[in-house]
Image (tube, rainbow, N blue to C red):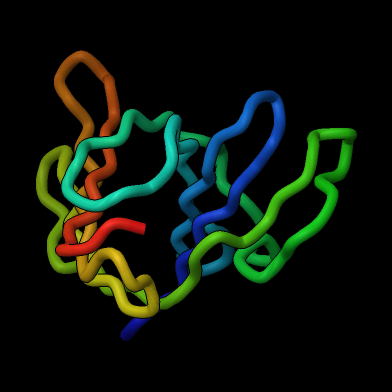
Length: 119
């Protein structure tokens, strides 16, 4: 069953993008350290779970933590989740039809959006 995802442009503590994946009661989250683009690994940092509210939210973040704008949103399905690689099918994002979230043995995380066009 498809679940929602969102990519939020967030200006605090520095400009970055938050990838949120809806789960049962929260959204799993990663901070993307540069603009989402197709076919290039993007360094990412795992974040604590976010409230589902943020999948649809735009505006100021509580606690004086900046402002978020929804850059992309749609639905995803987990294609596979093995070892340290999660593969997703995406819909609703024009520059990518799938994504891969990979955690390397040294703990670094990369997100790659797979598609044919730039944004």
